[in-house]
Image (cartoon, one colour):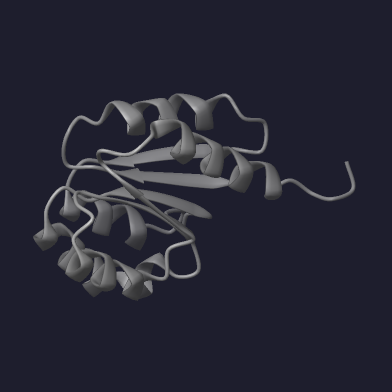
Length: 127
């Protein structure tokens, strides 16, 4: 499983997700993008297609830019961390078809649990 993390700022919850993903058995690669341009480059690279993308958005402009890249993110499972509970932002975010929405001021334990479950479900069923 390849995991992609995106955040333009230092984010303690995303750092925890990074460490968690690195420690999991089915995870082969964890890529980190710190800019929208870096995210585009990662998604366009031959090995850049993630199975799971955890995207922390800090401004609505970043969310709008992600919407322009939605085809590059397909078919990755998306976990989206939004800056606000604002109804317009949430409605816009749903256009990316995330599997889970979290909020910057929310409980990081819920984010960790969801990411962990997605990683576990990526393992082959024949263990």
